[in-house]
Length: 485
Image (cartoon, rainbow, N blue to C red; front, top):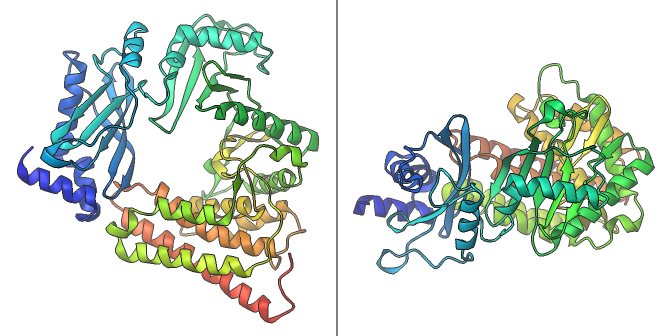
């Protein structure tokens, strides 16, 4: 690396070079060449890598920039790769790596035939402050290689059936194709198992999905998912929950069946939107969940308003150096949100899904199916209402917000008349709506997209408008008969 490139890298990782600096690291020819050169060395004679498709990036100014790529390897094969750039320490050294040693996983991957065509699944390029991890390597999830091996997958699914899992899928296949759906080293992993002999099976060979956990979190997630599925079935809410097939403690993995249909999000914000009835069902389902007995929320962690504020502050820390005016507006929004929340009546916490959004409600001819129970908590009932309202803004943003009011009205009609717009819960929901819209903006608008700045500014503007509307409603009600709880 030239001294000029070294200076540009340092400026980019500090945030001093703005969004153009971050994009230089992710997309500019010198940085891309360094990445491709290192991938070529890892492939060791297997030929140069194909296109490296950038899928996601996360920037923590002054600490690190992480990017996730799908690397094409020919023949339709691809391999997820995670790349992290960190500021160099004295004499151009990379800072100490906090991760555990991955040599045992490397050997296991080689033994299972999962490393090829890569000869190594981990490398460092000190001159660029760069570290690479190639799936299925992640020292913080040592079971990832094991649950990626087709032979172990077959045995694992058979064991799940033998342990009385809720599969009901009939005889297991003799071979499985394994696809890594989500590769996030140190954070989360999701894999898909497709029967390789599906054409000869009576059930058509539907896929099974595996979600990996650590520190025992999988057992709790499994119990919560089962309780949610039981409650929605008993309540006859018109919405079901994805019931897990099994939890396998030796692998710390929860298995789920393939859910039929498509996400509700795929129907939103488009001409001829046919989601009206489904939005009402989504509202009714949320109301039923919040009316569940206390046993549904057993062992769940608490999530309060301050936690939501801190979450947005963390998620948006890259905005301040890259878009100073927008970053300052988010800081102001957080201060005003705290002040407004302190003035509103509160109520007892209840079961919260924690990530209630259109991507997690799947539509099929049989109705809606709720998925993903990793973020369930004991929280303000207004939290999930506000999150769904904010998510609707996101899906209607492409149409300049046309249809958003009607979509929200349909959802709230399904949620029920017991919480009118003037009620304290709905006021808090509107407050959460503003906060969550800002949070999903800074998380979902990709920093390497050309319109990142314009979209971020526009959506933060909308969040600010929503908060001002909630503040005004609170003032009007405060001058009247008060706000109903």
